[in-house]
Image (spheres, rainbow, N blue to C red):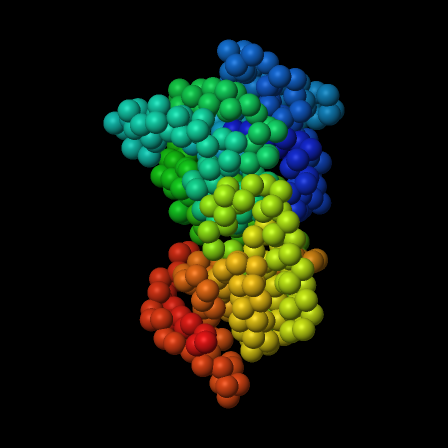
Length: 419
């Protein structure tokens, strides 16, 4: 099975392998298909071109055909990601004899709102959106829309900002997005004859679900699948569900690779006011302070038998084999860091996690992040589950009331550890 991966707005064929979640996504694709992917002209590792010579949709289609020829792919399925979907639609309509299937993830037929297409951005808002991209390109600010679930993850944001800078200049990024706002492939949708699967996240902040539903209604015989989630970036969220659907669509079956699961107490910390502090101190002094922070973390984890999953710049993700240990670690670390004039907030939750090598995933991690985000400076905030599990430990709590945790169903009662 041949598969051409058509990237979205920006891409970088080398850096895509350096982000663990992205690499896992590509490896899974490669487990059931021969995959070819490429950076379009002027982006990633492709040769730079003047902004006014960035490829049109038709030229991108020709480039995809050239990639197939070079790879010896007479026929292939196309996987279009976001912007790549428009090119995929045009390719499938133009070259039906070379298209075995079409898969569209987070795609659109028209990004600009019209009277008969209400899901796009209003025309009067386009210039403002482009200005926002230009202003925040070097900082990765687009994550607020592209992936709200990780927008507060400072380490990921740094990696994403680098990915953006390496994938395209700010001028090229704005020019490509301007071209997207001018692209309309609605007339080509009825001409797609290849079997088509459309996958859409229900709460995608970048491409609203109406875009995907429209594609499903106007491509003959297409299957439309709406999955829960708010992230637009293809390798984030529950990508196992996405990959499973793609595999079954292309091969007729899916290989179930359930990750190893375990019950764990998850802890997340964050340094309060870190951005302001870093600006005030300067890069070198701030790095020195974070190294002292990390040294204290290491000592405290050893004393409380915790495991560091990863450091996120000015915070950590760790696990413990019991919630009482996690709480005592958080309180001890908070007090120790105050000697460095560092204040932290911490969140603790116990639940089922997915063990992926040295990394951690699953709803318990997501809930912990939301709990931590609700904590006040200097506060160790825990879920009701944790309170119930440490009964009789002598640890006391203050009820902080019911909270709505973003992306988590229902309301959650949270408690602060009493000093």
